[in-house]
Image 1 (spheres, one colour):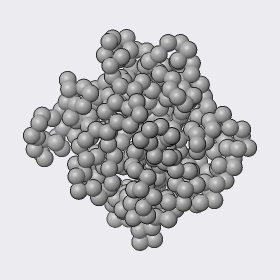
Image 2 (cartoon, one colour):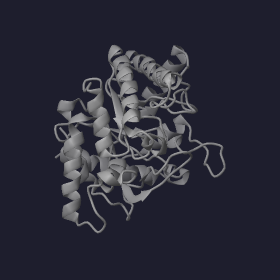
Image 3 (tube, rainbow, N blue to C red):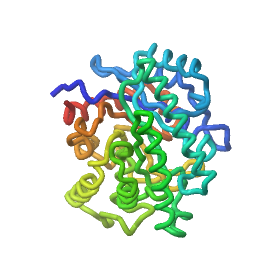
Length: 342
């Protein structure tokens, strides 16, 4: 069946994340180029309807003036897109810092959330943005430091997230914490649940589920004690484990990324064991994308989800700049919407 919701978005940050001028890194891809690649995709007349957006250089200076942000809004709208979810620049090296850190680091984290809320308001008032959340994470790469005192470190993340959630609520926004094995305190499905429940502000802080990252939750990467599967598992055992995980996290899920994972982990820069996104049609892909998406999208409309987004984070530039890549991705997303939309 054909549906009009959720809207189909593409992420702009694959042009930035893992890119740079460091040794072995590929150069960033400009915002306009990413928009053009997205706009060119077409599957039987269906096109991408919007984009999700990382609020950092070189695409955006998070401290840019209102007029500069309005020009970016004009550029995006001029390509025929809406803006959905925004990624707050909470990472060390952007304008933020660790949510697990000291008071000065916490203040930098909260400052990044305030910047994201300011830009969200400009986009909202412009009219280019009518839905979506602001994505955050613990901004603490790797789990080594967290393991030195898990209870105290999780409590610190919870405290930072509570303050951030209140900032978002005061600005009419919701935060979504990205479930990813490289983020301390969020590196397993159980630890992520502990943070969400610890904050206990479901109207202001929810969960962002990504198919590539949450797949690795079931296997216990970076948290073997919370693995739901053992080596050599069957297909039936996988889906039973997947259902257990999604049943726990789905009630918190307010933002959703369609993606594929080839079962490996892939680090770039200071990331530690981060889930590797691969192409929608990768022969090594471990997920039935359409089926897996259904576990997350049950009652999605009731949780305020109005769009879904493809995440091709850390794709090589040659893949990102190949038009066929985006047609196949768009086709996969259409299948998800046809199966689980409204």
